[in-house]
Length: 490
Image (cartoon, rainbow, N blue to C red; front, side):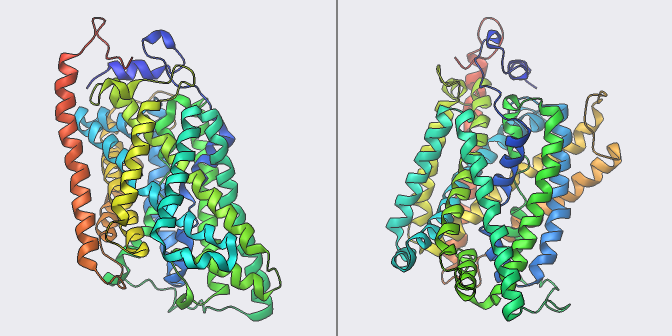
């Protein structure tokens, strides 16, 4: 296990360590809003509602099987090892350099298909700002591509300038995520009183179906709780990380779970599930129900909020993911340029730029030979698979690292080692099930073989690329150690 990078990142404000580090810019409020914008995605609410009332039960399954094990694991591991890199550092300490690199590589790469899928959802809802004039563009690949590239450029520019600036996009995005949910709940209550519920919430409808056709939907709802680990990638940029990460996770967890459940109930009250579209459901619900109660101007305003929320989510993950190749660049498993920071803004600009370009490539690959819906499904499935592979390493690392002593300053999982091991097992099994389910195409997909082929091919390309880069980086690290014994990125 290589210790040099751990020494360098342990004190991110110390430029004398040989490598200038990013600034500490995130306080408790920023961190709570970061978790909310990273995890509370409005695009999963209509997908859940389209599956019917049984999705409410699956939200609770996701809370117990994914979010709680994930949040508690992050709480303890980030307290034990609060330095920059998050899961990269944890996996490396537990299983060695290769596991650490593959964890960081997979998690970084997961943002490439994830970011375009967020932008596709934002673009779809943005068309509601234009009213009826925007409906014709819902099937226009050109519009979705242009919107995605513009959103990517905005998030990239803000993050290069610095988290002290980019965090405001994240914060506004978190507010933009919760306001539509709140408005939807208000509209739902009014519609319920005037017209009654469009959906019956009985025992039969609440029972989840476990047939193969629903596997992809349930996997996506599990993925909706992902994101609690993201801020730990920027551990060196969080003020008093050990103290505020547990508090931020607790507050954000309540807001995220309430947002998903209340939003899904409100959509089902307003519209029957047969009328819902997975990419437009919230705007469908708000536009139709607002018109019924006389709030005709509400739709465009909410559409704008949804756009901001998704841009904020994309910016948050762009910031978090760029810190992984940054640390790998310091370790020299990636070219040393990845470990550099901008001389003025002290941001990992090389890592950010490379990631931005790669995201743009995934926008094009996802659209190639597909309809808008098929491209969106491929991007979502790829995001789930590649993002959850590192979770396997993280939950395994939680179990293995229980053998290391923990001082009184460490925040432990309640119940200590036995509970931590049980949570690790639950999280590991739920992650495996989610990965398998996410590869199942939508029952309405006309070209299932193409969708599955893209998912499998791109997944193997990502993992194989990581293995190759590690082998090359291992050779580079062995032949490029400075005289003082520490790998440097400058």
